[in-house]
Image 1 (cartoon, one colour):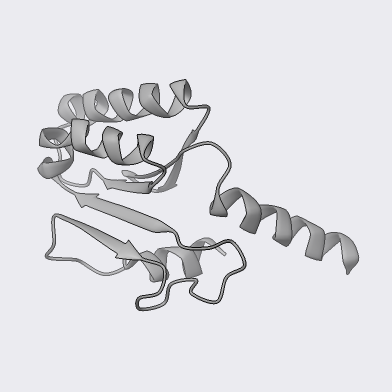
Image 2: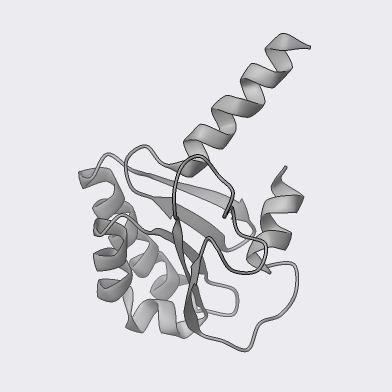
Length: 126
């Protein structure tokens, strides 16, 4: 499941974009999903440190945020990650590591939680 998710996000390949939004109806999104539209924010490199307030605002707005800190100095990356973790915690959200130096921040209960529940239910029915 993690490999499919990383492929969906394009993390398994190098991306030139520093920050972009992806609506669920676009390439590989969950447009037919019963959960409605999902907006994903992907930030890569030092832009994550510079734009951490924007990322926090997006998280507060209900968007899923992927933070790729590869190539960022450890202290700067940790500072940005701590900031995002604080925002997520205040919103009862979750921040999880999905790959080395790549983190997924989600507000409250969202599509990721529902996917995980579906996966667990499917295993229970097997």
